Amino acid sequence: MQTITSPIRATVLRVGRRHMTIAKDLFKGSVSRQLYPYPDGDENAKFYKGEVTAKTDIVELGKVLREAKAVGGCKILEGVGKGDLGVGLNAIIHETACQTLISCGKADVVADIEGKNKILGYCLTEETSGTDPSSVTTTAALSEDGQHYILNGRKSWVVNGSTAEYLVVYATASTPDGKRRLTSFLVDRKDGGVTNGPRYPTMGLASTSLHDLEFKNVKVPVGNVIGEVGGGHRLALQMRVKAQHHFGGLVLGGHKKVLEEVVRHANDRKAFGRKLRDLALIKQRVAGITMRIYAGESMLYLLAKGLDEEGKEHSGIESAIVKNFITRTALESLDDAAQVLGGVFYLQTNELNGLFRDLNAFRAVGGTEEINRLYLALSGLEVSGKHLSSKSTWKVILDRTKKSLGMVASSSGHHPSLKQAAGILDKHVSQASTAFEAVLIKFGKRITDEQIVVAKVAQVVTLLYSMAAVLSRASKAASTSCPSAQHEIVLATTWVRQCTPTLDILTNDIKNIFKTLDSNLSRIADHVSDMNGYIPVHPTEF
Image (tube, rainbow, N blue to C red; front, side):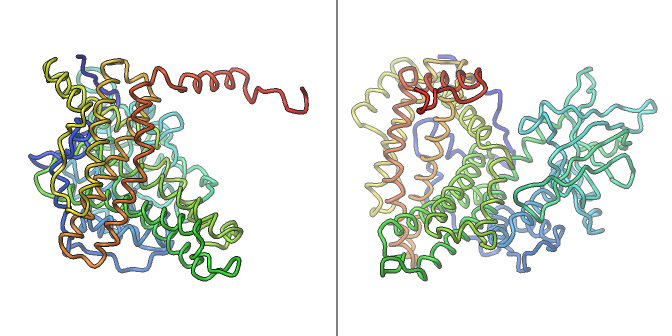
């Protein structure tokens, strides 16, 4: 059995000795013991108390996020997300730049910058270089006297582009082995050579300063290299992973705002002589929004608590899963809100109208949905491949026989009231493991070229992770006599059942990928691209 190596490798953030293996265990075909019990609350988290407006002090908010760590930071950003997603984005980017410096031993530099109440910007993306940092074209050349690097290039979509006085900039520089590799630099704008392009005319995020920045012969002292020369690629991926849970908290806050507005409207508005809240189809939409929030919230704080616990390593797979899930489901709920609110939703004066425009940005911020899918699935399949290759042939046959007979290892730790739902999760984890093995055996290293298969693997693991998270959380609520325990049990069991049909379809597609309609979808897309548009003859022209 060949193992695969993902071209979008998992980035490991080393913060201790143990491993955060929930997602990895799902790829191996088991439910992680780390799921139970669900993490305790964090009474010591410091929560931001200030009013969130376009004039919110970004530096102060960034400091509070840092002090609150992952759990507290997500809770803070939930509140920010209900007020202004743009403000939250500004603060997250400032904090990402700060963390870049802190992770490389420059905490004193951050303290000095923030002591002056100065904002930092983060310059990675270019016109032809988005989520993939390896294609950066901005260059850094060492001066003849060896005292400075000279930066030249142009960065795109720079958050805090017109307000940041210090910039973390990624550029390629020559390493001792003679190769050019991505390197991170701290640029002080007052040293000159940095010019702003006009603000992007975005559909949302009005409180965010988004600009192109041009760097022309910018002199950067060699002491302003962040980390090692040539270490920028790993650093950039680490920072993306670190920021993703913050994006999750921010968007989750916006998602909760959606539910608040939908419930308020459904409670107030009447149709056919009845309140909207009493109509079955409206109830279905309200329940759908609620379950998505519960699943996303359960996943986010399971991840955040794991990040905060001393002695754990984090692969980045969980962060990609959570960020993707929360962003996608928030937009699904906005679609439900549009149906409940009707024409009111379409008014520019309606808060959800603005939220819809703001939220769409987060499908790209922190890695596009498709890139995150490829990243998490290929990284996970690499784990599956190593696990499968470590088994003997007889062990593989025995495991498959057990799975075909329904003899799967059951998860433990769930509350008795959730036994049936936990059994459903076990069944789907086993089915997914069989599908992943079939894919690896069929494609081997070529799996990296099978994007449709990989995307479906990502969808499966994301749903499994969501099911595992809600069952863990509801079990904790039930076992601790939480006031909302019965409600949470209903949420968790209903979510698990709702995921089942989708998982059945996806795992079947993965196992039989060469027999499915995916090849036809590819052919249709090729035909349309070749003809530069829609092909069928119009019905009136037969």
